[in-house]
Length: 142
Image 1 (cartoon, helix red, strand yellow):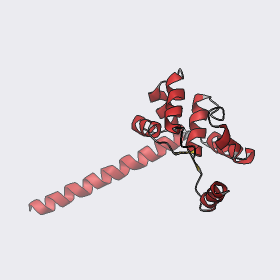
Image 2: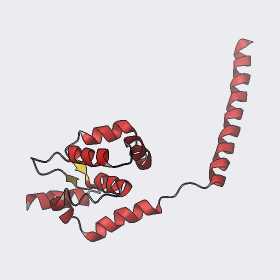
Image 3: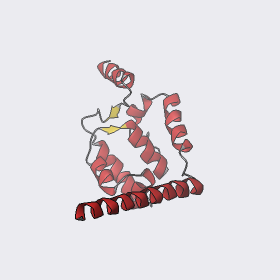
């Protein structure tokens, strides 16, 4: 009962619950085993999650992983972690799980036009800054 109240308090404050409440299971090690057995390399997994490999290795050493992290890893790997953590996933409603995956599907790469627009804007701003810096250094030299 206390665990459910703690989870509700986390959600009330905008946080996702942490999993890893079972003292005999190290969630990071379980996740590491699944990631390493997958045909996708660690570098590729990290790249698809938009994180560094170091962050992924840190997750492997963490017992209390955020449920959203587990879901994202499962999505990238194509693995259902509810098989490894049935008790924890049973606590999550189907509605919440669907929302996490829906949010991930909405993420799109920026269009090429937008990239070039901002790159152009950045270059022009950088050129103006360099001109102002050159004028400033000439004034100081006089």
